[in-house]
Length: 216
Picture 1: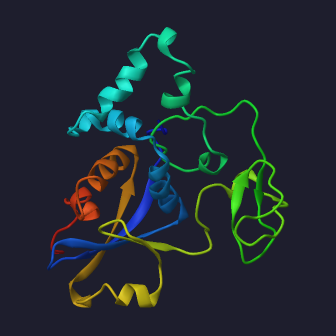
Picture 2: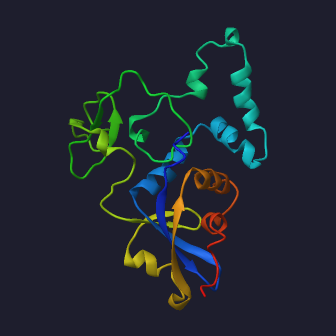
């Protein structure tokens, strides 16, 4: 799991009258964290959330793989419970569990077209999207999923949008009732967010409920 000392700062825009988070203003690193959730194996998610009171029995499947004698396995258990880390995920903050890092790293290539951002591991001569050559090697500093040239807004229900005046005004009804709170987001909050994302449509309000209050 990610180092427990890792913390991200995010700015909440709170509606004091409605007592809810309207949206969070975040950097690339937080969006990369959110998007990496979709890469998590379902069984591993269940195991992560077992101590958080998640209902269901998916974690039993994960534990069955762990406990099953290797003589019954056609392939290594690690393929299921310790998957290799895709290069694009290797620099994402607050990863919710440790991946196996391949001993031999594969090169990552980007489409040569300035209008296309398709990226993939290994050698692939033609971009499947625009048919240009996949000739640009992506460096380790280009990790994650989204670009860092802009800020982003994350809605209470985790919808992600670029931060812009038009997007802000589309979600703000009573400017007078709004106030900002800067909060720290670490591994404990990450696990709570993961659980809430499977259960709620008001994730940020519930996660930061102690901050959602009328400003004195």
